[in-house]
Amino acid sequence: MGPLIDCVFLLLIFFLVSTMFKKEDRDINIVPPESDSAVKLPPDDRQVVVGITPEGEVFWQGVSVSRTDLHARLRTQAEDDPEKRIRLDADAQAPFELVVEVLDLCQFRGLQNVGIRTYDDRYNSK
Amino acid sequence: MKRRQRKRSSGNCEVILSPLIDCVFLLLIFFLVTSMIKRFERQIPVNLSDGSSAISVEAEDDSYPIGVSRDGTMFGPGEKNRYGVMSFSPLSDPDGFLRNVLADRGTTAPITVNVEKGTPFQAVIKAQDRLEILGFKKVRFRIRDAALASTDASLRTN
Image (cartoon, rainbow over the protein chains, first blue to last red):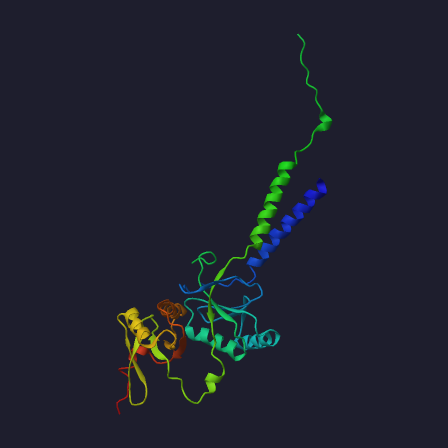
């Protein structure tokens, strides 16, 4: 009986730790815009998340990047897999020209599979 | 009277493990299931313009222009001045105005939203929602440096 309990406890701790790692991976402090016309999509763990804060700071997978760095990363992404999903997490108060700038960059690099994240009660809290 | 003597079985003392294992299994299955559930997330799919539109010689003027200012007010198009600059005026009943546009031009005719520079993203999404819910299928966005409200007053006369 003892080894069985050891094994089960090990699995339990593994799942506890792995679910906790997932949460703090890509979090940035933004509130996405509310939209009634957004579509529900199944989440894709492999998608690239680009974030924009109200101050105009741009994040790549939760890491703050400069415009030059963003260019380089998008270029690398386009070379590796141009069909990869890009999710744009822009704050509701971010200036629209910044959103357009990032969308333009994606278009320039040939990344066409882009979506804009919107507010969802189950995920976000104000 | 004989006193009943309890036999103490000191050698058979053991912890009951079954409830403990039940509890641990229950926790294990809970974490397994919660980590595997694929929740849906809400997104707006974007169709980015193709590269050819940037190098086309003739401007596409088949779309109907409207405007969104920094405070989220929607503007309708007015007349063009002699320099070809479109004037915009605020709409008192945006839904009614857009329904008329929809009735005139149909759902597949493109509509271009001129967004003032510095407009919060939420205001643009709100305008996009309104157009989407009314039935517009092709919505384009462009950034505009000059304030929409100043188009009438700022037109040059000389």
